[in-house]
Image (cartoon, rainbow, N blue to C red; front, side, top):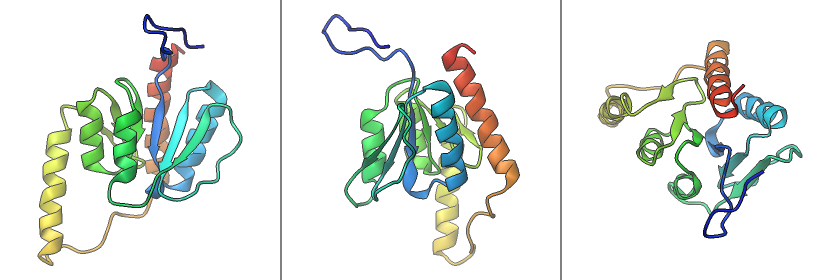
Amino acid sequence: MPGAGRDGKSLRLIASIWVDADACPGVIKDILFRAAERTGVPVTLVANQPLQIPRIASLRAIQVSSGFDVADAEIVKRMAPGDLVITADIPLAAEVIAKGGQALNPRGDRYSADTIRGVLGMRDFMDTMRSSGNVGGGPPPFSQANRNAFAGHLDTWLARRLGA
């Protein structure tokens, strides 16, 4: 349970998980729901649409207004250093890392300060290629290997934060 700081505000003793929920696969949300129930770690889903979530004390949803990057801005505003953000949005991941957080893609790719610049560069390059008509299609279908990689990184993060 959080204590009070010198200024009387609540101190967070446990890092939180923030989810860029509009495009997050349902199977990943289910993994996060089970983690919230099992560990009590705060998990907040942020989306521009209403979300149905199970009744778990440490789980909540925030609906933001529609608009480009409104959910992203809300996550960056509310997250704290050490928090984990689940997102496939590479620019959001870069902002999270710059603010001292950690970012994990729902496909199980962990972004870090060492890799984010290269990932951003590749994203920009691919955007240029797509807009010129040289590359088509989207990402490959979500796989069991993606799910397992995500769950493994989440478990490692939880173990470090909860001392398990």
